[in-house]
Length: 363
Image 1 (cartoon, rainbow, N blue to C red):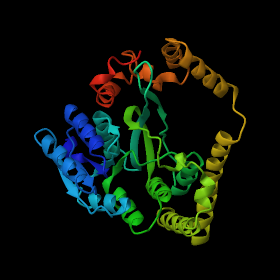
Image 2: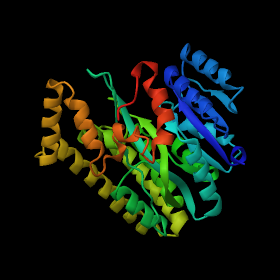
Image 3: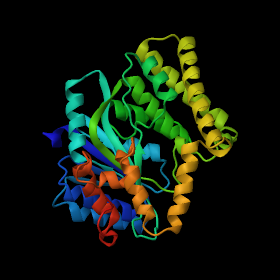
């Protein structure tokens, strides 16, 4: 039974509207697995969050855990995981939506594949913005991929050479609990709090990329993640970076020694190589976006967007064309089309995110 296999843990802080929306979605979907809300909000947001949880108790198996507002996010997640009894667990942000059927598939996959530490599926990233035609939702693919090297060393090198977060996956609870105990014991900034658990998880075991929509994330202008660092040089040049990256690298080396039986010098060399690849990719990507010449396709898109703002109806026409181009299956028009293979899983999320005032979805 799913309720015995998997627990969904939702950390939240001072965003009661988002938590209310997420719980409304899970209640409407009649999610069967237990949900733990780990809340460190100050009042009155904490009071609103507790009411949102209490309202869903007749429909959901849900537990509310209150933490002091000053708690570090890593410590909050670690403490929330301590009491999770199920063999598998998934973490979810309060503004994102995990697809219940995909959570179940992930847990079932891990149950029959002991060499895998994580399982997940495809994901979409949606943005809300005002628009003249009232259609204020845009969507793109959110990168998630399989990592299937036979050793922790191979998986770490692969992961940091082509980085994407592993946070949003179904994990083995024991491994996830140990990962966050390790992270919680260290005082790291948000970038390393993202990187370290992600890397520790892939060292533990393989990550399976399953088919189907697994997650819908909401993006924000002030997104905080490694790939959304506005200026990586400011991060690297910061007063705490040198000490923090040394702690990060030491933790990874110790994990490789345990997992692969490497010697200390070899483990540290692997970590150095992997970390160097991560920084090289991040810096190259950010340089290209800020200083590099735009590719023709980027100029074309920018020109079309500017034209579309001036000509009524052209924006929606361009959206329709774009949704049918290669790679356009995650455009909002494609996701909202009944012929899309993502449609059954995406539309319940769309209706909650868009709200009653959004009208019919774009197609």
